[in-house]
Amino acid sequence: MVMETIFGGSTATKVLMYLQNYEEGYGSGISKTFGIPQSMVQKQLKKFELGDILTSRPVGNARIFTWNTRNPTVTPLRALLADSFKYVPQNDIVRYYRERRRPRRPNKPL
Image (cartoon, rainbow, N blue to C red; front, top):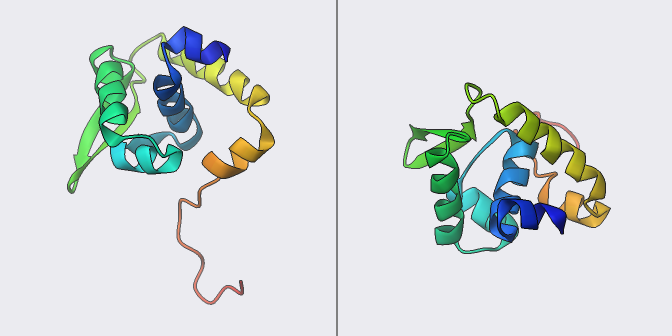
C-alpha cells in the first residue's frame, strides 16, 4: 500500500488512519482494534508526538492522543489520510473504523 511506504510501515499508517477516523485515541484501544502489540502502537504515538503531529493529555490512567492543530502540516496530512479512505476495502472499514463510540440511548430496542 502506498500509505505504508509514505509513513514507514503498517503500524504508523494504522495509527494515523485510526486517529483520522476517530479524532483521538489511546494506545491500548488502537492496539486492540488492529490486533497489534501495544508497544508498537505506543512507539508510533510517541514518534508522532515528538514530531509535533500529535498532542496528548492524561485522562485517568490513559494518555489520549489527538491532532496538533497548531502544526500547519497537520491539515494537508489529514486531507491525504481522508482521501486514502477511498481505497480502503469496505470490509476493513466496517471491521476497524465503525466502532460505536457513545452509549446506546436508554430503552432503545435492539
